[in-house]
Image 1 (cartoon, rainbow over the protein chains, first blue to last red):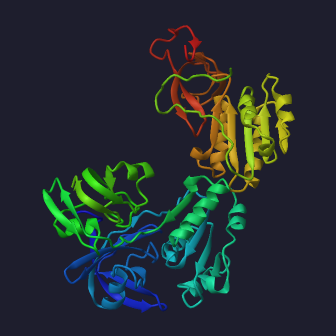
Image 2 (cartoon, chains in turn blue, orange; image 1 turned 60 degrees about the vertical axis):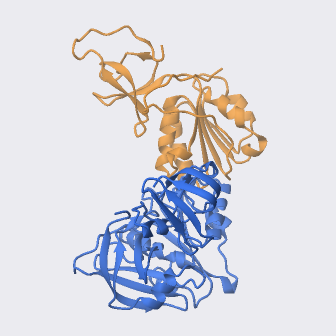
Image 3 (cartoon, each protein chain N blue to C red; image 1 turned 180 degrees about the horizontal axis):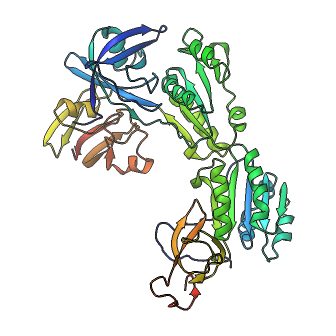
Length: 320
Length: 198
């Protein structure tokens, strides 16, 4: 079985935070303890939606040392493929679900002398766990958190009241924004940056850091891509000897799983590299959307990340 | 020419590059002896308006040329030991975005790199360029004493006197190569010393 080990859980709390974000609490069905994790880890939540099984990654936001329960916060995306809508509309207290063991692709670098966290919107969630972890270790950290408005600022009140000196909040609707040049310019040697938020924000921070001479090794970022819908296409899986059709609303990885092929995965968001698949033959165009492969690998036509990338054309043969 | 073409070796031996001007508001350049030539090769008037040079001539005459570059600060010192407190102070006061350039002999590059790593710069982000002497900073694995500027293999440990074989096994933490007793089995049977890369 691919992916991280599974855990059967029960939903014990569903807490709406604001118009867009709801928090879910999972406790293990067997009454035992969950594994500890490290701040920045995510879990992959299985959603049985009729015939469809969705597997979506969500950052764990609870205290990494609290083994009694995990919590996640899900932002409703009305335009998305339905995972967040499923969580919002169909998941209720008492329900049994399956989640994966924690996997961390956004961990703190504990060699850092200071951790500078930059969050945008729902990107706050991994930082809530990291802050708990650092707080316990008396770590040196500082959070800069941009939200659309006070009403949509998830966990702002908690952060400001618990960590008044380390939390800085910026509201878009009040025309507040992070003065990034100033912020990055004043950081002591040994500072690492962590950024989680919309694609534009991650690019903005990475570019500014590079321009100011920050080593790329100290700029950490996480962005889960949701697979985008696209035209259906046919794929031949050489190892399994199957021909499958990838539907408009599903990813290539999901289509392989639907056909009973045990394809490797971890993050399902184009970040971890686990699902990297060799292309044996193709006639058409790849629609690469991951940020795992390098530009030359995208151009080579030899590899594809089936969790987020698609294909348009006549033939695609994969070594799977 | 002060550049030496190092022969292939085990993975443990450090690999040096060529300095290049990188973006950043502050630049710290530390060099000894012929390392000055690596700084001269990338120095531009604009770069020098943001640069602090710490230089150890060690008997060479590059110092006046470096001084003429007009760096914001220029320090010339007699030895690494004399300069290290200044290096630590500069790193302690520095901000992210500082670029560190190290040039010259392996002993100075390795020790200064250690200070920069301790200050929080990833070792992969520190630029180095080897110039001049290929002498090594050696640690005796027996008495742990350090012998600087070892030019021959084998050599006598300057602390305990054992005859030491010069290995390629390098410690980033100690900024030195490992020296191991060459005549432990048969005391006195010591090969004639030769140059390290001969």
